[in-house]
Length: 486
Image 1 (cartoon, rainbow, N blue to C red):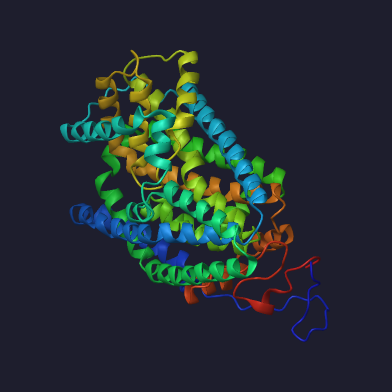
Image 2: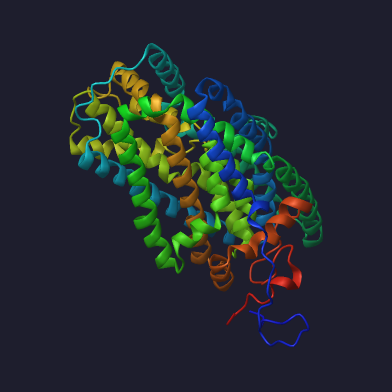
């Protein structure tokens, strides 16, 4: 890496003092204010707060409008700029292998937690008619996807039926397939033409990221509305009934983050707690909106600015939103055994393993939005069937969980996000496309990516870090001191 240089070019290697932004000018502060205000309003005026959910829904809906274009532009530019399809294919294989291992571990930990703490044993609650009706709706939706198999999954969720359809319907996997095909086609063109096309797509990405900045101004308001609704609708009385299930789930997610992701991070040479500090803004937005999809565009920029190559970030993050949902996997096995235990059944260990193997497949393609986990759970149990999971037992069990699903959805989304960020850095290092010194500096001082975030989401420029270089997007020479020995 280039030696650190001072502003006068003397090469003394000293780091200039960077003025820090005042806390009240940063996004995380106002998101916290929104969350706290939502809690207060939810407790003081629950009737009014129940009508504020649309604020979070509107924010998520606006974000979903640009998720497809962001993924398409990022993946196309990332892969096409490599000019080596074999290298891109190797990255994809490593990513899918990592996702498979992480999924298996998360599902197994969920099973262990359910067996050790048995949150459903002795449960005597009865779902309300409204909850039972909602459960039947989820079962109907789940039945459409729960028995499709591998071929059905490919045809219905992966392979696009038109070029524009996946963008209109916000189908992440299909957008990803289109992006990969487009990138492969561009890679086969003459270098001069390839550079012009990639530059044009990158220019479109700049406009998209400009839109993102405008939308993100509404994040604190969305967090306020989402939290107010959560507290008012699922306050103290309803939460008490299923407190044990929630405690086991959140505790299991925390265990997975600290022990599993912490261990993987340490093995790869970084600290998971510093990673969490780096993405605190995004985690707070997720906590308020209960949707990991709402921060996808910001993560693409931030992780690239932190030292991961553009092609790794562009491939791993969008793919991980469907194939690496650690929190959802914990929820699936824990929720399934809770339903069995609540019905007075004890699922044999052999069937538990079979259920986990089935969920390795059914967990793929689950959207990063609120409620998707509940539908996936319904589909998985219907596909598994048998005497332990009859249609009536599933309907009653889902109806019971619906009352607290919003609270558990936040845990799923937070764990999913942290898992995908860790996966990006690990796979980038595995593939030799991680600037480890840059990452170490950013993890020690997260403010180093602030200029990159402002540039990407302000002027719309996507991060310009290229593989093997030290260029820092939007910072020019100001970040040069982040170098060896700094």
